[in-house]
Image 1 (cartoon, rainbow, N blue to C red):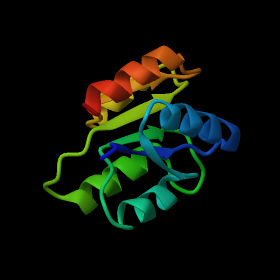
Image 2 (spheres, helix red, strand yellow; image 1 turned 90 degrees about the vertical axis):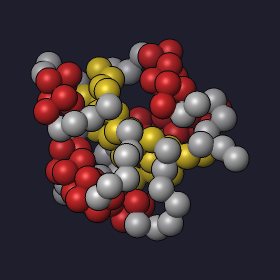
Image 3 (cartoon, helix red, strand yellow; image 1 turned 180 degrees about the vertical axis):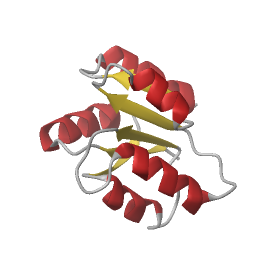
Image 4 (cartoon, rainbow, N blue to C red; image 1 turned 120 degrees about the vertical axis):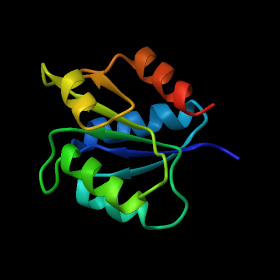
Length: 120
């Protein structure tokens, strides 16, 4: 059974490109265009093995998504990787309790390494 990744990214072109790349690496991918849609995806059935979330999004930011997802998931451990172009992305990811962060623009090799680290 393939590992499943939830990708939350507001930029459609980036979302589609990353989804295709991750799929080509052998993973199932579900996508959402903002944190609110991401929460809906979490409630649709099987939980993903990893969440990749952009910090800066309209409707519900990545930070808000992480806090709400933690409430929703309660005791379940869910690795979450923050993606951001912000200079303080690493500090913000740590503050939010994320499992890691990726600096935008994303280095595709770094993305693949991070995904495989959490999806054995």
